Structures are given as C-alpha cells and as structure tokens.
Length: 440
Image (spheres, rainbow, N blue to C red):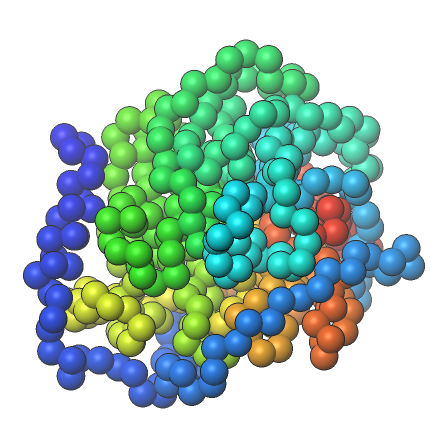
C-alpha cells in the first residue's frame, strides 16, 4: 500500500462525519438476535443489571485434583512449575513453544480494572517472565523429553510463528523475527524488530497474536483495544481493535478487519480455510452484556467496537456517536457468553478424538471479573458443519471452579493447541501448568 494507514484514516473520517447523528437509530432495548449459526442470542437492555466487579481467588490445584474431560478422554499434567504460560504454538516439526508473560503493574495510581490481566487481582502481578519455552517430545508418548528456554529477555511476548527460516515473536510493542533452523534448541542470533505495535491497554489487551496465511505470504496480527470503549479518545486507538495484515518482512501493513475489541485466539477453519477469531467484548453494561464471540473474519469487515455490539446495537456508554458505523456492524457467528474472557482458539484437525469433535473449535475461557457470579473458567467445544458453527456449545474441560459462591478457582485456562499425536494441550496461567487431554 502507498499509505499503510490510509484505511484507518479513511474510517476515522467516516466516523467524524457520522458523529451527532440521529439517536433514533439506537438499539438499546432488550433484543434477541439470530445469527448465521441459527443461535438465538438474548441481549438484555444495557444496565438491566448493575455492573459488578467480582475477582476470583486462585487457590492452585491440590495434588489429588485436575480438570475434568468428558467420558472417553483422559487428562494428565503435561508441564508444571511454569511462569504464567500463555500462548501455545506447535511448529511444523511438532516442537511446542509456549510464551510466558503477564501484565506488569508499573504505576500504583492505575485503576484496578486497568491492571486486571484476567487473573485474580490479589495475585502478584510482578515482573513478567518474558520468555519462550521449548518442549520437545521425541518419543511421541505425550511426554516431553526436552524443556528449555528457547528465547528470553522479551517484552510481554504472546504470538509465536515459524515461517520458513524465520522465528517470529509478537511482543506487546512490536513484532520481532530471528533466523531459525528446524530442530534448534535455542535462539542465539540477534533478532530484528520488523514492525512497531501500539503498547499498553485496558485489562488484558497487551497480547499480540500471530497467524500466517496458508501460502505463507501474509502474517495476521491481532491487536486489542487500548481501552474499554474508547473512553480515552480515538487518538489512543490508532491501529488497535483490529486484525492487521503484513508481509513476512513487516512491510505492506493494512487493516484486514476492524471493530474487534480484543481478538486473541485465531485459527483457520479446516474445511473452508476461512480465518476465525475469538473476541473479548466490552465491560460495564451489566451481567448480560456483551457476549464474547467466535466469528469468521470478513476481509474489510467492521464488527462494531466501540460504537456497537453484536450487530447494530448502539452502546449508550460510548461518548462518540456514529450511526453510520453502527449500520456497518456485522453480527458475529457464535455468542460465547458475556464476560467469559474467551481467549484461546484451536480447530481440531487431529484424528484421535471421536468423530463428533473433528473439525470443530475448542475455546479456552479464562473467566470473568465483571460479573456478579463467576462465568467462563473452562474450555468449550463448538461443533461445526460445512465450515460453519452449528450454534451449539458444549462444556469440554471443566473443574476449574472450586467454589462458585466464594469465587474460588483452582486455575484459569488460556490457550488450546492440537498436537501431532491428536491430543490437545491447555495452558493454565494462574496455576502455572499445562494440561494434556487425550482420547482413551
């Protein structure tokens, strides 16, 4: 592109033109939406219930407990004694890379809600580990025989990608790449920062995820918003709440899709090859709003943030009104429940799980803090048919909640990855563990 920001500033011009429009276009009453998957989504009116802050208390897992999977599956501990394991990436050769990072509280004056990482507020949010761990299972028995720090001294890393002879890491403030050879056990070569990314952000929005196109010619970067609903102004949201597209050398940036408040997990739907993402929606509108969602990502599509949610429902808390952008808002494919902090996404492409799980999506829900009762804290399964979600959701990996009334939890799932042997891994950043789920 001649100007990589042209799409953004064009949109900004549209936004300005739309400000102060007809308030009759608002959709602030309770509503029921039927989306593409024929899922009926009940949307209460904003503020129907009071916005509530309830942080979970993470206890850690007792020795005699672990998460629970459906009958026919077995759960085991893959790795322990980690430091906030987040994103899991499986390289083409089967090597498993895990980013370790968390929010660092750098200002005592920050509001508590701005420091929440999706973890318990009372936990130590000190120095982030800022590294990438390599696990290698050379025997194919579901147990690693090599564990080492592959790359360290990073800045809140999340997204990881191997593309040709390059190893990419998305820090919170930029995309780096390093020379890479399959099978190496440590990065020793000097890396290059090929793209600056906007840093900082409300709640958990420091994560930057990566995924490459199937032909390897493009890289997609998910960047969450810097605020809840642009309360600090649109100038603080440049290049944010988007999925960006670049060339592998960092050039040619453009906005692939926008209005995605906090897109974290991304994956390719195996039947159609379409890009899907899971998105954390906004807070402070009450227990029933707004549903996090899974959606296929339309190139050039606008998904509402900050002006609207779940289709053309205008957010009354947003100061900058823009009826034109409200009208452009697309309805997501599948609602995942409000405040669930749905982060991880992986389509099951293995052949070991029963047929009913093949081709569908596993979604890790990190859990709520802006709900009067705990929601999320589990891994869900969304069946797909003909490349689209069926509208159903099933609990898959549960048992993370220790006491619902007290708000006690054992851990919190973050990401899901499918291994070469057909099992899946689930990172649990609050308990510093990685769980493995395999078919019996």
